[in-house]
Amino acid sequence: MPADCLFCRIVASEIPSDRLHEDDLVVAIRDIAPRAPTHILLMPRRHIASAAELTDDDGPMLGRLFSVAADLARAAGIADSGYRLVSNVGRWGGQTVDHLHVHLMGGRAFDWPPG
Ligand code: AMP
Ligand code: ZN
Image (cartoon, rainbow, N blue to C red; front, top):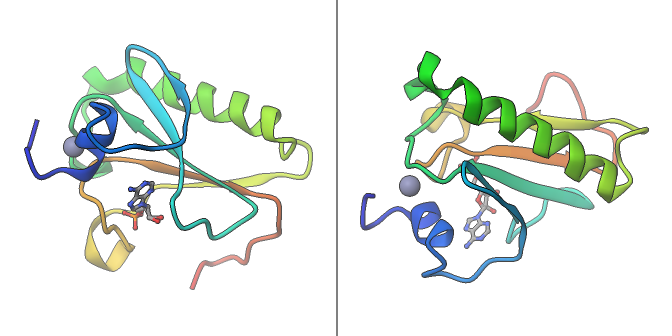
């Protein structure tokens, strides 16, 4: 694990977080600076820099991540109204933490395309 990776340190519980789910592949936490009434981050336990680094071998992890996202959306009461799942890649994509994560955002309507 890269010693300086914020989300690796959160996964390892070296930095506190509001953890909503964890299993052998995936961890979900509340975003520290929510941009929507529900704003959750889902990430693999294993360090992967971004979606650009994914391979076929990550299929089971990704299946888990998206099924956990659907469960958390239902639990948050936003499943019926709809929500946004997004993973930013690189600087122009808006990525600020270089450990793959998917934002689960809901509780309000979102514009398309994003700004
Ligand atoms: P991104 O800009 O797509 O890389 O998303 C990074 C997200 O991590 C942002 O929405 C931040 O608010 C969030 N974030 C940064 N530090 C923490 C932290 N310590 N705990 C929870 N979320 C964080
Ligand atoms: Zn990491």
